[in-house]
Image (tube, rainbow, N blue to C red):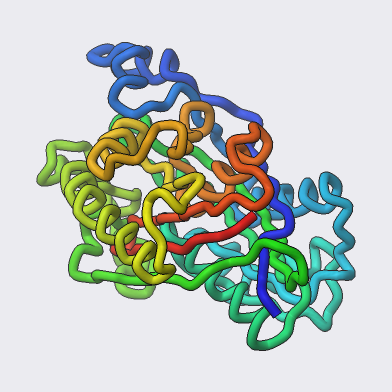
Length: 336
């Protein structure tokens, strides 16, 4: 039986960091320059004791209320994040308990960033169509701002924290999730990386000291680092190929798609991609100005906003394209 995204909600933490806040910290920048370079005005920061799973849980609770969904009807929980509660156990198991979902539900973590929602959507589709799960709760969450260096203005300008929740269910109605193009290139892993803290470089054996990295940013291997030029080059090269492959997989053309939603990495880069692929602006949805790059949550947040704003309507075909840390990429076409 086909799978469909039946409902979607998201959560943004209360604290907001504005361009004016950043310009006050970095006087060589103005608020207008930051917006011009990133397409972002505001980004949300999680509270000191608020972590990725908390953001995902709050998004799920909003989903249940906004769409009249009962926790007892969920039979699988997927949690996509790069910040788990513990090395063990699986955070999805904790979310199952906190959300009051039945013990009969399966639960699994997915450690992916920018492409994570689309990868997780592929797994959710498989659970519904192959393992006959009726309702899969797909959660994303990230509190990446806790990993940013306080002097790395490039990453501070881009990233924000968030959580998102989507219900993926079997359907007999119109609308479904299509097939997927998935890819990865680990040879480029170091252009977006937090080096210390895993088993390769455990924190108790390494001591992170500040230094200036190869791209003239203040860095620390205990913090997330990004080579902006390399990321831009990768995105400009890979995203068009991803879209081409997704269209070919579905025997579709650009004209067959009602809306394109890409990973909301950077507003300036998104506009460059739109122009490169000659996608009409009315078919290209961007939602980054008020929340920044929220990693795995960018696509569900944008999709939710597109639905709420009427930019995507029932029966529309939406191409989702995600690309980033890993390096990894994923794309599909959904009918809403």
